[in-house]
Image (cartoon, rainbow, N blue to C red; front, side, top):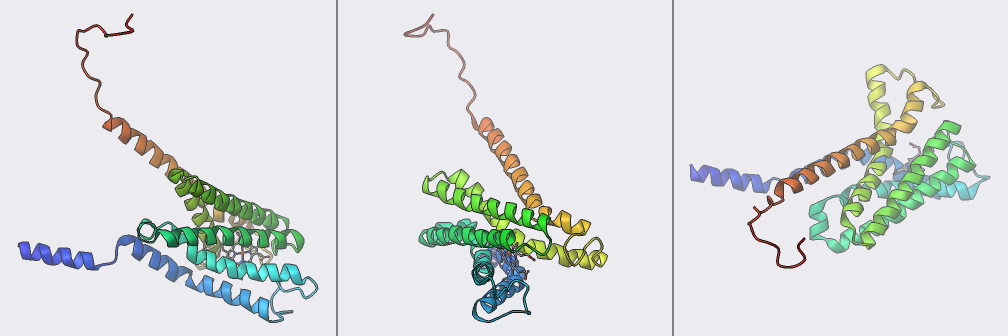
Length: 252
Ligand code: HEM
């Protein structure tokens, strides 16, 4: 019996922990998008894609370069940001966490600024609504990146952690945006969508792909805060019984 328990324990310790499996699955799912983004980005930076990609405008080389670079930095960001959340990685490789954190913040800021410059100067496929949603998305990402860095420097770990999660959720949302279309197409054949991204589902998507996940995250933080407060109250020692003795000094 004891042998069987020992064997089961040994087998369990040989399995990778749950978080490692979850992150590996997430990376596997995101790999196609990351590869597409890096490939298209590098392609637009080194070759003339006139007529092949609507992001390529030979008469606007700077914005074109910024936009294709945005795809490359976005791909790197999608790989780096989720790893920053892992406690085991943070504890074991502190130096890596710090440097990857700084890189993530820089990539987040550049990816967002690049796309905002593109949306506001050249305009997106979806028109003003998509320009607006992309700009808000980018501004939220820049805010999350800056706040994560600021609170890390200030060693305010609870806030650093919360802003880090917001940043990672926003980064993953870029992939989720594409995934929503895959699932929607599969479920409905793509109703309420149009090629110029102005259908009812498109417009809902433009905002929901990041705001809905941020709202869920905030709900989780609120629930976590309540649970911590009640655990603290439960741990507080009961007040000592008052003995019939007058206070030594300062009593009424
Ligand atoms: C987080 C990592 C990101 C990755 C990997 C990424 C990748 C890409 C790629 C590959 C495209 C080309 C379209 C496509 O082939 O799907 C694109 C377009 C675009 N991205 Fe990003 N992006 C990221 C973040 C952002 C952010 C933060 C913003 C917001 C400012 C943004 C706004 C845009 C816009 C406005 C377009 C052009 C949309 C259009 O006109 O069709 N992206 N992105």
